Image (tube, rainbow, N blue to C red; front, side, top):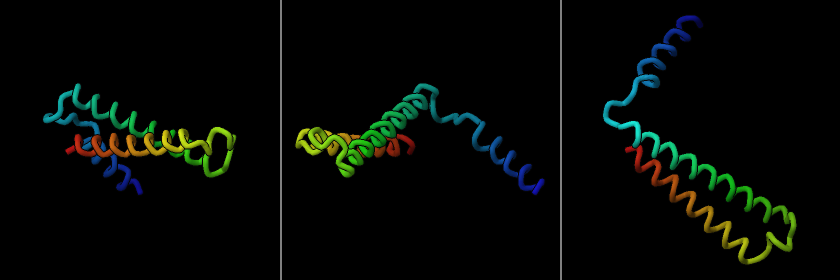
Length: 89
C-alpha cells in the first residue's frame, strides 16, 4: 500500500504538476474557460429538460419556445464541448 502511494505521487509530479512546454498559459486558460462554459450550458440544458419531463410549471416548460430553447442549449453545449476536445489535440 505504501509503495502504491509513493508511485502515485511520482506519477502526479511527473505528469500533472509539470507545465506543458508546448502550450502557452493563455491558450491553457482559454481551453479551461471553454470547458467551463460548455459544462455549465450542458448542466443547465439537462436541468431544463428535466423540468420538462417532470412537468414542473407546465405552463412554461411545455411551451414550444421553452422546448426550442432547451434543444438549442443542448446542441450548443455539445458543440462547445466538442470544440474543447478539438483544442486539446
